[in-house]
Image 1: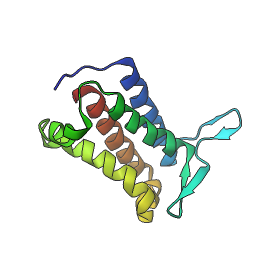
Image 2: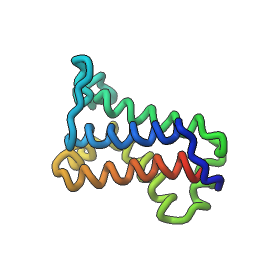
Image 3: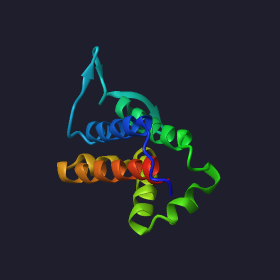
Image 4: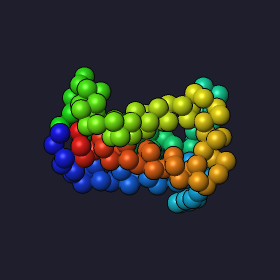
Length: 134
């Protein structure tokens, strides 16, 4: 466990947090006539917003650019952190996948600002753990 945070990890964590606020409907963001909450494309019958794509790419980018972790040992490294941090990593990955392939997940987290905030908290914590602790 290195506990080193580089500027790229910090930027990607912020992107993940902003993405979480947008996909849950808590916040809206438009830039150059691009609505980040609007559907960018459809996968498995579910519309994916620009914000979701950015959040997913930020998570993947953190894993791929992390010099301290090997992809092959990522799960074992995360388990060594303890239950809370391991749960955050697994929860983040699980929520990102379930958002696309389990239709009720996105609807559930978009139904209430409180649940949306819980989503943002989990994915941001998981992103932080991957970037800083692994």
